[in-house]
View (tube, rainbow over the protein chains, first blue to last red):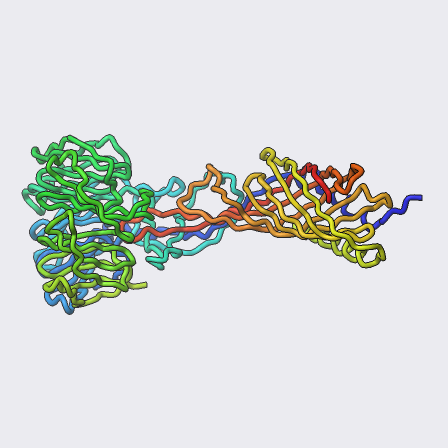
Length: 421
Length: 187
């Protein structure tokens, strides 16, 4: 008689159970944390009444920096502009804040400051920075701010702020059904080792933003795919004189240089001839430089930093120097390896590079084929720099710092305005 | 799924307890098989080796394999086998262990800028038959079920205007059940 081990029957039974169709399957679940941004609305009248010098606000999400005389104008992304009295660079004072909801960029021309307020352009008299006054609003000159497709803001009101909360979601890996929300779900920024803090606004998450440049009594702005031209011969009364389509998408930056406009997208740079200031005409492109790549230029060369980790998905970290002998087709002359470079600035032959976690680097650029390193400020993560009149203003991961570069071999810290965490 | 894993663990405990109830000689065994795993997303090549000891109607050992279904992975597991009949040619087996991820990329339907794979649990169940060849080496045929878990952590860069653009992470957890057919050699 066959001896049967009944305990051994258990795996057979389990095998039979396991081979049922319910077990032969692929399951996938997707879990993530996101930040939910719910808008806080105000009426247009309330917003416009508040575009003036208000009480100073702490700096949380700095954007573009503009220096005019003894004052620093620092954009707070999507919120407005800080006015900082820099009469004494060793002791800058955060004097006031101009509330401009939706503001992403600014430009200063004489005593007039231009800023975007969502779809509108505002012109402000800053002759007295302690008492800024609204002079003119040009309405509907920028495309409506585009958020993700599941959020449609109330078009009768203005978003003045956002309520933010973290939410953890687990769902099937199959694309979820489209649903509309009264706010925006945004991938969290809290995991960034550099910023380490949440964004105060979802602006810039695929939205339409204005970018400003000044040249020849004209204010040029780019938004997503278009270039707007404003005549600012009368600075406090900007006039929209032209709006032209570039025929390209994801336009993000504009840089004026010698009657040319360099317009950057995520796929390349477009060169426009602005000899006729009101009618810039495209005359060249070059794909090596993208909108993620900060660029400056002097009379002979363009200096561009390329970095990995940006939305342009580059893989290199370097400083490229291009000759502008043929301005519509710049040629690469030299490449210098960097760690993770961002903004840069030049004063005479001194070149300053913000090299991410490697800090601020100063070079002698007399001979572009042989840049000579002069000094380095380590221990800070640097993103942007403006070097002017022996003072370098540097935007770092957590502060606005000022360095004296009278002796370029020994950069001396003058002051530091800490950002709010 | 948790319930099924619990049942499996219980089964293995019963099997292991039987191993010590016998008085037969202990000898070394090496099971080396290759075959295919068939699931909802197609089929893939699998191969494994299990080395251990046999005593009477039970054998236990440690297995290591290559499992290419959906994502490439390397399961490492404890293996127990039992011969329910005295002839000891027909057997059942159960495996429990950990599935190490191989070199993979996320699926094309997922947008990512960086990724990292982690492993997960691995289990297997099945039956097999030994065909004697007259020598010390025997041929085996096996069929059954395998389950493996693998996790992909995806990083995406959120657009930003200044500073280093923030990276956000999400996790995709894959639980993959397949039918398996293998053949190989027993030493």
